[in-house]
Length: 266
Image (cartoon, rainbow, N blue to C red; front, top):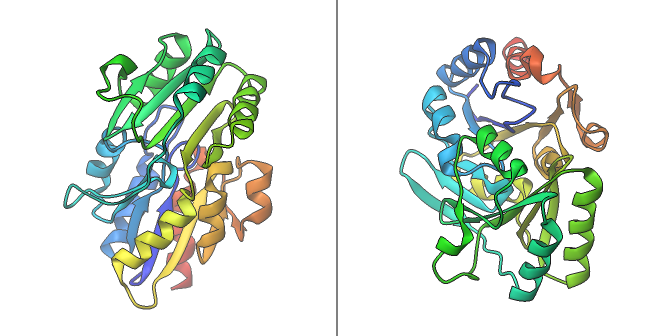
């Protein structure tokens, strides 16, 4: 397993419906690590939201966070790479107005999460990620450079309205869906795939082979940049189209399936 880097998405890929790592996946990942394999996560989550899983799996390889806007080393508690997004105050006002009661708007800055409005969509997201947000009024110097904006919409149609608004503004950024109703506004050129290339440079392992696994549109760049890209059975059709290989449904222990294939081939 030496010189193999396995990078996994979390939601809809590694974690089950209860936001847990199955015993089968955890055991397989530890076996992979014990044989010299390198394992890490690529997610839209924050440092705090991934911390329990990093401890559970003993991950020391740098993490791809905020869908590629930040590369963070848990072993050294150090940010290795970070990109920033600058929002025009007028665009921010339009985003908040559009949200109303049909969407939650979250701002990520220096590892903390701030919300423009508190409603049921925000509260559901906080429960899912296990991280509470603070009112945007508590963010000193706002508006200021930030890591990303997440919009949790009531419907896909509502999310599309935000996508059209940001596109029409001309803001230099990346727009990506991490779930059907989760639209993320990322810094220009931020993606999981770009962050994977940064991670490879930081690791400096000669002859490193990379394997990526994911389920949604925000994982496409990861799947394309990896030497071998897997789509879980429940993946978005567009991700399945670009994947090199397919694995089982995320609730059938997809990571364990992939690792067993690696062990069998080595």
